[in-house]
Length: 67
Image (tube, rainbow, N blue to C red; front, side):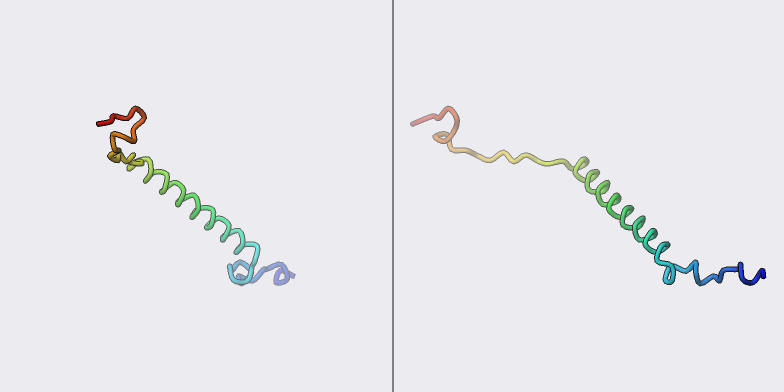
């Protein structure tokens, strides 16, 4: 009788148990997405966006200066 209650170790394997494998893949995917978001946010926060300051012709400004 005790042999009927014993589950083989193969049922705990990720290849044969789709519930365990789907849970594992869900957590791996969640961790990967979270790591990418945090990494990108920290990169943007540390470097920041540099606002370009292009040269504008004096005749094209808000208050133009004519010759």
